[in-house]
Structure formats: structure tokens, C-alpha cells
Image (tube, rainbow, N blue to C red; front, side, top):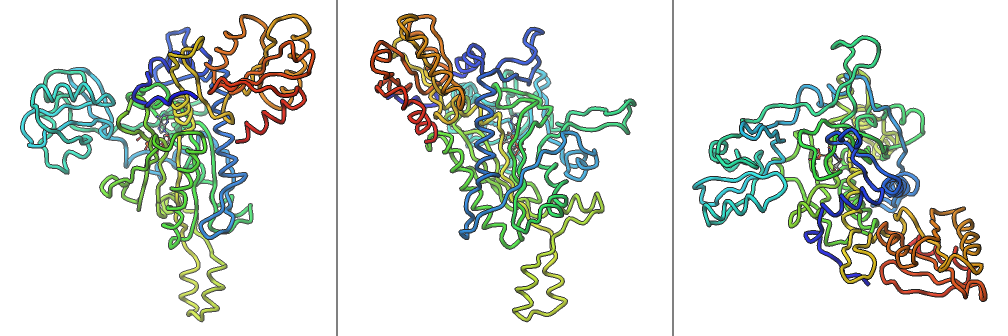
Length: 518
Ligand code: ATP
């Protein structure tokens, strides 16, 4: 078995380079010099992304978990337009009200989101503080050299709370002198476009910065057409766009990305129960991708970190090689109260409330007063939102799978994808390209290819063919040898252990199916 490698010992440079070399992720428009914040998914990256996407849909929409009370939950799928009426973004708060505060560095000309800049502050409040964005080590070195005392880490957003006269004493990332950061200013992350023939302010529309709002806009449609009762969910997977100021860390933060979001509509008094339920279900789902338990944590948002309408929020975080020893966001599970439906009700003047017939009947049985029943059985649902990044999930599986193998002959590393998510399930190789072996390999290839992605190859030594499969994360290699001709058997090699088992040609499909289903 391969020895697990701690994320901090994995090199992002190597991961990015293998992604390019092996057809997972390419820089977008590469022949024109690329375009910052955009990536293209190659054949294997697309397969990996689709496998994760399908599993999310399977586990959220087609076969969702049993609810906390032992009843099946009901979640419906949606695919809304990327461009919606711009008024929707005024209602949601993405235009106008809450734009992201940005700070500029006057010296390096860098621009950062205030909540993305961390600062190491000397605990005694004396001397300079050092800011950094991802790589804490450089800031640590400087502060140790200057102060040799203990430090606390804050984000720029948190500094006023600890009463630090911050900006003049902060050394910004990548500069030497203090005080080059400006006070934060609002900056809108939405990319705009002008549908139709006239390009003026009236025609301005936005590429969605999240898939969630398309769900709120269709809440009433789904309720009216799908015979659903509260609680229920609406789920959607699709592209989102944010004009991120500093796209970075490969596909972690890009300007075009994909999200997997679900809005769970429930009666207000059940909201905390469902928040807790989805929080734990989502963590289970991330583990089901084959991510080690120790590489995932919950991070509950502190009260002062919550949006004003949010009652609770927790992030599922992963130990990325570039954040280690810290963790970075993967998914947010938020208790959004009735904020979104109320906002859209106010702005669109369309009622988005819910008449709870079951509650009405219950209250009638309890002998509750008529007016009271009327008041209580019509309400605006509360929303619990698990919102995750599909392209970020691809990054997590790439980082998690990447295992350098200095001791293994032939391959420098193995991509240890859980078989269910591997882009190619098996490689079928005649040991030599003669003596009836290629024909048997070709027959097996055709049989397996009816139901799963497999490859066959007759060129190069068998060792080299195995190594290539290890490097793209193919869990099984099937060697067709002399025994295949005489006894109708093949050897199946396991990617992680390199152990080989001999099985009958007619058993290969069932063998693989069992392993892939695990
Ligand atoms: P961050 O603080 O990292 O910008 P966020 O809290 O704004 O993220 P949400 O709006 O909650 O993120 O989006 C839900 C999920 O969408 C995130 O957990 C992440 O997985 C993904 N996501 C958000 N922005 C990006 C991006 N620029 N590139 C890739 N994935 C993203």
C-alpha cells in the first residue's frame, strides 16, 4: 500500500504541471498567452468533474438521504438561466448594498479583498504587523526577525474588533515599508454584459455570481407546478462568474467556476434542526468522495462574521497544500432565515410565502382560535443553503489523490482517486503484441467499453503502460498474457498495492463492477 503523504508535503507546482501534462486542466486560451482566472478542463478533468457532479446530483436529488425524523426528504432539480433580470441582483444585495470591500497597496499595486488578507499582529501590540494572503511563512519569518515575540493572526476585517490602529503599522504582502495599504473600498464582483442590440446602462445585465438566486426566483414556479409540500429542496449545478480581484491557487479561486447549491425550504421553527442535519450530511458526502477524515474540518462562523440576515453558518474546509497547516473553504452551509424570499417578495411584489395546510389542520384539531390559525398557517419559509464549488471539489480530489512515489519503479507519482471517481476505470494491455494476445485484449476492451470508460494500448513496455495508468489514477490494469490464450484468464493489477490477481476472462466485468461501486 502507498504511504499517505501529508498535504503540506505535496507540491502545488507538481500538481498543476501534471494536470496540464496529463489532460486534466489547461490554462484557458493558452496559445494566446492565457487569460487570468480562467481554465479549460481537458478530457480527464472533464471526466473527473462530471463524476463528482453526477455523484452530488445522485446523493442530493435522485437518492437523497433520509431526514432527521426518519422520513425521506424531497429535493427537485433545476437549471436556471445564467443571465436573469438585473433587478434580481438588486434584491439579492449583489448590486448596490453589499459589495466586497477591497484594499489596494499603493506600492505593489496589488488589490486584495479585505477578508482575504491575514495579518500577524504582535500580541503585545508593539511594532509592525505583517500581512499575507495565502503564504503565512514569509510574514512569519519577517515578524520573527523583527520582533521575536508571539503573534496572533487576524484578517483585516477583524482588526477593528481588536482595536488595532491597523493600517499605518501593517506591512503589506510583497512590500517592505509599512502603511501602503489603503482603507477598504467597495468593489462589485459581478461581471456585466449587454444583451440585445443597444449597449447602454438600461441594457446592462449580469453573469450570475452564484446559482442560488435562480433557485429563489423559481421557488414559486416549483411550488405551484410540482405538488410539493414544505419542507423540500431545490438543487442546481452550473457555472458562476465572479470578477475576483486576485484569482489564485490554480482552480481554487477563478473568475469562471461551477457551483453545486441546494436551497432547503422549511418552516421557521424547524430551521435549526435542518441546519444541523445538512451540516452533517454534507460532511458525510465529502468523505464519500474518498477524502481523509483528518483533511476535512468544520469551521463555525463567529457571530460577527455572519451576514446580518444569517442565523448561523458553517464552512466545510479542506487542508489544501497551499493553506496547510491551515484549512480553506470548500462548502458553506448557511441558515439564511427568510431573507432571500422576503427580499424577492419586496422587490418583485410577488408573494413568495407558503400556506401550510398540515399546520392549519393540526391547529384546528388543537382548538386554536380562527384568526390565530390564519395568521400562523401562512408564512415565509426559512432557508438552509449548502453551497459548494464543483471546480473546487475537482481541486480537492486532485490534491487528495496526488501521491508522490519515490520508491515505485516507473511512476513518479500515483493519483489515488477512489475508483468511482477515476476518469478511466481500467487499462487493458496485451503483454506482447502477438500470439493471439492483442485479439483477446481487443475483445475484452469492446466488452467493457459498453458500460465504462476503459483504455487499451499495445505500445511500449508493460511497465510504462502501467506507469501511465498510475499517473492518471486508473485503479485497475488488466494484463492479457500467454495464460489468457491457453486458459482464458487475465491478471488484474491494483493501482495502489500493485498486487495482481488472476481471474477468468468472463469474470472481469463483474469484478470491476463490484470494485467501482464501493
Ligand atoms: P470565498 O470567501 O472563498 O470567496 P464565498 O464564501 O464567497 O467564498 P460562497 O459565495 O459561499 O463562497 O460560494 C459557495 C462555494 O462556491 C464556495 O465554498 C466555493 O467552493 C465556491 N466558490 C466561490 N467562489 C469561487 C471562485 N472564485 N472560484 C472557485 N470556486 C468558488
